[in-house]
Length: 224
Image 1: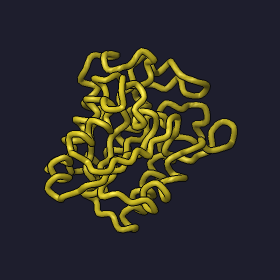
Image 2: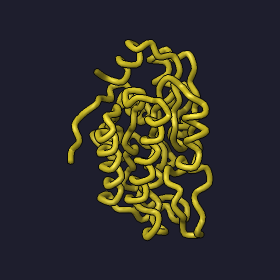
Image 3: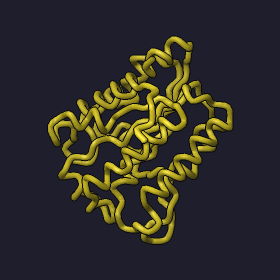
Image 4: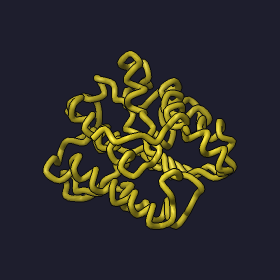
């Protein structure tokens, strides 16, 4: 069963989305065309709570300045997802984690995977069941985007970025959550065609592809 079908069949009413600026809706021409807005409209969600924070990462690992990224998902999931509960959760994190290259000894895919794992385990311990959670792989970054960004957020390789994609897929399958192959779906389009003029964020079509990936997410078998 796909995530969208499950949400309807289970009679779910509220949804919280958790991520960075792409979850906030940056790049979409209007909020209704953001991936979260499109998913909420398709599912007739009674209450959509957007817990995205622009510029945030999932991991709280120290960056080049020795401090964690402000607003990181690991530091706030308790308040955003457990204390303020919803019927279902969609998590779309990893894009900024993958882009950041300035502190590789501490801020890396291993730390990302470890903290993501701890977060999902805590959600299940708090009473969510695996089917309540949909986890999306990081959105596709256009090739030009690998070299475009603020200090520290440039210079990643395609292979390095895809390590984060793989980590999210493995995690989703390990916990038997719904997995939305966001990166994989976006990668089938010509490089750059889903990017907004700022290069970093998806355009309306990119948000549509993300939304469709979430709605059609499935529970699969771990690639490992």
